[in-house]
Length: 583
Image: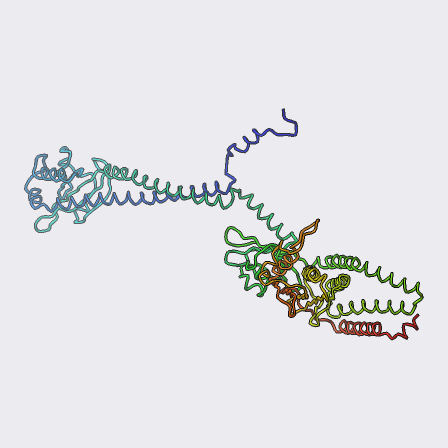
């Protein structure tokens, strides 16, 4: 038994397979019926246009044949003499000659008349001696006549010519008739052949229409016109309603379709539809990604001040569909989150160091060495202040600066000297700071692992901007990387260390290389002069275009920087007397 809310499958199947009466809904069926109707109509019209002149041509041929027989009869040399020297009888020489010609030519009748219009010959001997049933005046006046007319023998195709003597005087006329039934028989005998040819042409046209309709059925996925209209309306509403950019390209690289968001993200116009992608966009990584010259999922590209994530999917017709997501709106939240993580890591790394210093300070106070305690605190605070200010003076991005300050504390704990290269300079214009944090953090961690436990371990970090390209370089005096291993060190899963119990190794450098290639850059390792390794990562388009700074903002920034430098100098080089006075 079935429940009240369930429908049995059989009735639904029957409803689907039940033929629909009336005009079909599918594009395939409608196009096929229209094409068949057109082919049938054209075939019928062509057949009618062929048969209509054919009837007139057969009539003309019959009349010309009758006229030719009449002219041949009138040219007989003895006929005019017999007409003048004998009488119109059924066995006379004129009747005999006319019957001979009729039998030889297959004409329906051969009538010879005198100038009065009296018959001297006829197929029916009883008509001899009587006046002809049609007007003979035109032929007796010397004219040739062709016509379709009704006579005593019925409807016939006629030819009439004058009969002349040796002097050219008209002495009578010759009238020859071809039975009209024979003309109709010829016409009717031609109709089946014409219809056969027309039927063959119609069959070929129907087959062609079916093949074309089947191809159309495959291309339209057997949809109805109403379905196609609905899909088109839904597509327009969806494309212009979604917050992602959508760009469709044909096989020649021309823009076929784009929505409002794509126009906004790429600074395109509606008039750019149909233009070549290379002509609508400036050269650069963004154009390379959209054109398919850079492959991969979630590719980063920069368009003006916007950071875009692009995904390209090829279509069956050789074109492609590109979707674009705006990452610019996520930058603020990403900066806050990564800043919080960096702060937590730095606090965790400084925990042991601060505990040791507090223990030392407590011991000095218990021993009564107050001046030594003040000097110890001043020195510790000054070192940390100098390290932070050294980083922030050269690196203006807060995430990168916070990362290096935290890594410096971790390096101090592990007995490694971390220094910032004098070439370091990074403005606050990174389009994707988390990626640069990941690259720099993995390189520093890798260098710390390589130099930990080494005597006089040193590590130098450098990050600088070359136009819109960011260059990250981390060098250490560790054991280095053998030359035969440098090609595979960036392979995911490759490591020389024991994996931890709760995770895996060999993903840090692979992630660095993947992020660099995502921007169209590269990562490489070389030997450091004096021993060790130098990791260099190049990230194109990592910085946005520099915006002009208003004069007032620049002046305030300069004043703030001057005051900061003065306070740093006063805190770092404070004389001992000042410390004691403060005490």
